[in-house]
Amino acid sequence: MVLSVFNEAYSAVHQVIPATAKVEGALLSVDRHNLYHSFQDGIRVSVGTFFAKDNNYTLFRKEDMQAWVIFSAVFIVLIAFDNCVLHRNPKSMTMVKAVVYTLFWILCAC
Image (cartoon, rainbow, N blue to C red; front, side, top):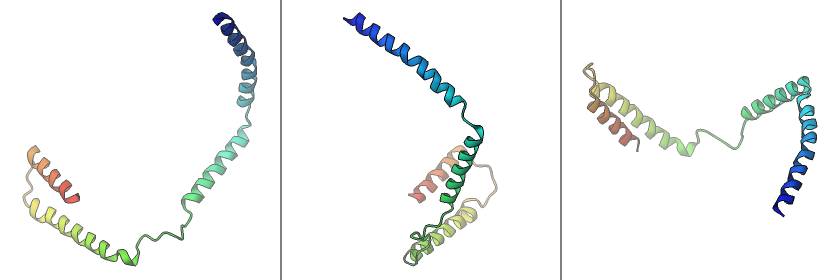
């Protein structure tokens, strides 16, 4: 029983192989000119979609102005703190000090 099923499957596979070889030969003979133009058209569509204007999206909305002002002020204060207070002396930093500074900035980001 199992042997007959195996033989049927084996013969079915060998009948499909010549058809697969014909399809493979047809795929290999694709016209390069058409392939180049289809690739070029795909790039053109992708670039057009990428640069298309979305009229329903606004980056800076009036209701977000307060959040942007607060963010900008905090950012400027932290940069000034970093440059004027933390790095007054131009000494090389130890590994422990670098880890502490890194943890400080990560906590500020949270």
